[in-house]
Each structure stands twice: as C-alpha cells, then as structure tokens.
Image (cartoon, rainbow, N blue to C red; front, side, top):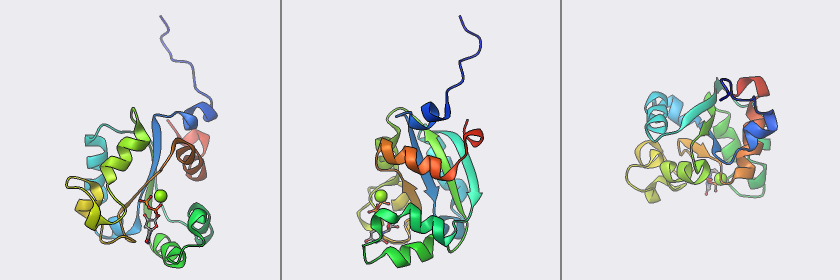
Amino acid sequence: MTIFAPKLSFKEYIMATNRTFTMLKPDAIENGHMGKIIDMIIGAGFEIKAMKYTRLSEDQAKKFYEVHSERPFYGELVEYMTSGPIVAAILEKENAVADFRALIGATDPAEAAEGTIRKAYAESKGRNAVHGSDSDENAEIEGKFHFAANEIF
Ligand code: UDP
Ligand code: MG
C-alpha cells in the first residue's frame, strides 16, 4: 500500500479527461452571482483543482476566443470579457467536460434548460455568466492558458 500517491506531471494533470476549465464571466461577478455559481458547481460534484480571481487583458481575451475571430460578435465578446474581473478554474469530476456543459446549459439562456447555471444567472446569449470547455483537448489548452503548474492541485 502506498501512503502518498505519486505526483502527476503537469502534462498528466492537465490532460486528465476528468477535468474541464471554466470562467465565471464579468456579468456573473458584476451581478453578485459568484458565490451561488461556485456553490452550484461544487454541489454538482465538481472538485476545484485550481482557481483565481483575475481580469483578462485585451490580448488574453482575443487569444482565448481566437476561434471566433471571424464571427460578427468577436469584438463585442472581447470587450465584454475584459470589462471586469472573472473567476477562472479547473474542475474535476468523472466525465467533466460533458457534465459541466450540461450543468451550464445552452449558450443562449432563453434556450437553457431549467436548473442550469445559464438559465438561472445568464443575462443574454453574449453575457451568459459562465464558460465551459467544449472538449478534453480544449480543456487542456484553456487550463494551461490560465494556470501555471504550481497553481494546480
Ligand atoms: N457569443 C455571442 N454571440 C453569439 C454566440 C456566442 O456573444 O451569437 C459569445 C458568448 O459569450 C459565448 C461565447 O461567445 O459563450 C463563445 O461562443 P460559443 O459558441 O463557443 O458558446 P459556448 O461554448 O460558450 O456555449
Ligand atoms: Mg464554446
């Protein structure tokens, strides 16, 4: 029996398929929903492996949402995501990416299911309270984007 689990390498930590990445977006913080959203996340069985209260620079927001750079809402999205503080976090749970997408609900709160975070707290399709990675690959990229190895547990 081993008393201490062997330490995982940074790559192993961040690549684990049971992890996802989230941001509580500026509208969620501004509207005072930070605590309630974190409570919903923990209540749904996600463990917090990394977390920080921070603000994205314009460069960071542009890079994070680069995949949407050709979309008409890109400029507005970057402006909104840099408009105030966010909470960035790495979460762990079995089937993390899919389960977290289910917990946050559809991009547009008008289409989000009852009981989801976006249904409860999003203002609109743009200002939609929370981000969730859409694949294991992106969870890895996004987690690395926001956290150094020694900030991940
Ligand atoms: N977004 C927007 N208008 C749209 C679609 C998306 O402002 O028509 C914003 C919204 O904040 C969304 C983000 O861009 O969360 C990323 O879009 P995506 O389609 O990846 O939605 P998500 O994965 O966040 O549900
Ligand atoms: Mg997305």
